[in-house]
Each structure stands twice: as structure tokens, then as C-alpha cells.
Length: 246
Image (cartoon, rainbow, N blue to C red; front, side, top):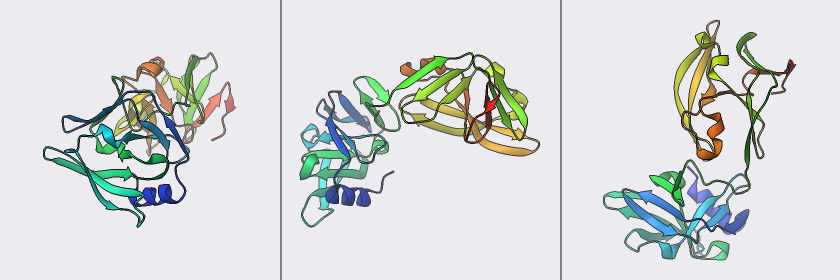
């Protein structure tokens, strides 16, 4: 989670990187109650990578949101808390000046669930400038660890995501399963969904969480359902026989 003291200080002194209104209906569920239901939220880039939602203070019921002590002597930003029944969280900032005047930031992971329109989103809000393309390819992909071939495929899917390196998703039948062992690690991506992981053991050496896959990806990434992907940075990947740079 974010360091709220540092975040508030940054917003007070330099302001956000970028602020844009979003027409999306935004809701956050907390202990069985929607904290707000608004079509007037802001996308606020607190850093350059992706936005957070800031919500009009008027969208909150006064019984849910409580303003606390200011972060600064001028009263630009305030600590705050939310409470629904017996559950509370203080992972909240209220802004009363500048570009974000009259808006509230609830830590994304402090809420139980977030929705854009009627679709649940995960980990953080989607960046409206990020695009994902998943393209079938006939280029041969070979993956090695410790000099041992772990997977080979001549029908991979290439996933291109704005600002990130290409990822190669392979059919599970292209993997040598004697080297794979299920990991307990999971992660969430707003563009793809919930990922599960595998460790790989080669000649007694374990490589943790070098493979991930999506059993039930989001609609926009449905084409990678059931395919496996290797961390390019942790394995040797050959594309048509040429070793990819890590």
C-alpha cells in the first residue's frame, strides 16, 4: 500500500502528474455496503504508470466518511477514515485545495471490491491509455533454464501491452511437465485477471514463480486462457533460434 504521509506531501508540494475526469460509473464495496456510486470520479496519476480513482466527497454518505487531522498547516490535505458497521479503515485522504479540491482518495486495496460500470476490476484502476494486443504467431519459441529446454512451441500467442516488453504465451502441451511444480503464489492484473504460478526445478535447482497462467482471464484477454507464460527476464528465450535479450 502507498505511504499516505509521503503521498500527501507530494500532492501538496508538486501536485499529481496528471488529472482527467472519467465518465465511467465507479463503485467501491466495503463490508457489504457501497462507499459511493458516482459517474464524476477522476483518474489521478500520482506517478507516471497508472491512475488511481479520486471520488467527489459529495458521493459519500456522511455516516461513512470522517475527516480527521490535516497533513499540512495550510489544510490542503486531510487524513480521513471510513466506517461501515464494525469495519473501519484509515487509508483515506481528503483534498480541500488545488486540482483535487473536494475529492477523496480511498486506498484501492482497503476496499473489498471495485467496479467500473458492472465489471469488477483488480489491483488498480485501468490506465485508459494502455492497450493489449494478443496475436497468434507461427514463430518458434524455445525456453531454456540451466541449458535444459523446458518448453517449445511453433504456435505461440504474442501479448503486446503498452509500455511493456512482449510476452509469449504457449500451449500447456508444449511444456515439459516433469520440471514444473505448482506454486502458491498468485497475482492480480486489471487487464488480465488472477494469475497462478509454477516453479521450475532443473538438476536440483529451483526457480521460483518463473511461469504464470490465467485460468479465467478477463474478457479483453480471453485469448490467453489456459496458456502459460515464462518470465523473459528469468529464462533463456529463443525466437526462431535467436536468443532474446533479457
